[in-house]
Image 1 (cartoon, one colour):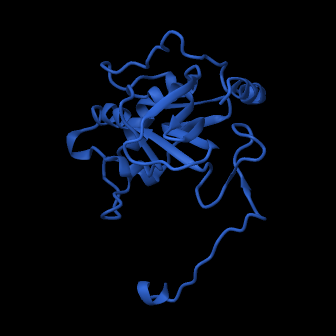
Image 2: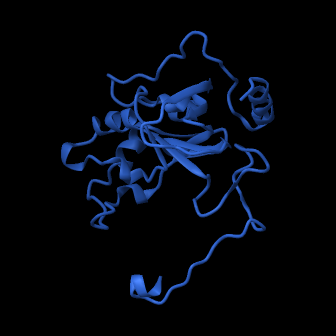
Length: 212
């Protein structure tokens, strides 16, 4: 590594004997994270980015890389990810733990290392998707997720929504663009109560009983 990078460095790893737990308000006691920030995965939606950019001046619009997601989904309505609890991609199953609050890093262009003078996309998110309540606060884009069934994900894999949840009231109190509305839950789609701290155990139990 030192020879390749041209600097003195060494390879390190996080041993399984020293796990970092995710926020227990939103996940199981045995859920852990390694080098990521608060949760193992961040999932975003291309339609949500389109809706956000529709509210941003053309010279300040951003690409998905600004949000540094692990997984990007297409084919959903804008911000439909806010209503998903359990998702299957290929052979992998994910549980969406909570909306992801965003920081100033989103204003920095990774290619130039410079922040846009407009403060976008944070400025628009602060205007349209900002709130506080039920243990979360900030401006929101994307969903933090944990793995419930491990496996391999490939580009182009089919995405299946297994379980839905009511829209959290914090990111839901404003909408992005009048032409984009938060989706109604389709008929026949499993509906679970809000993922408040008191109900997390019940949610996990209901998910298990659903055979997922």
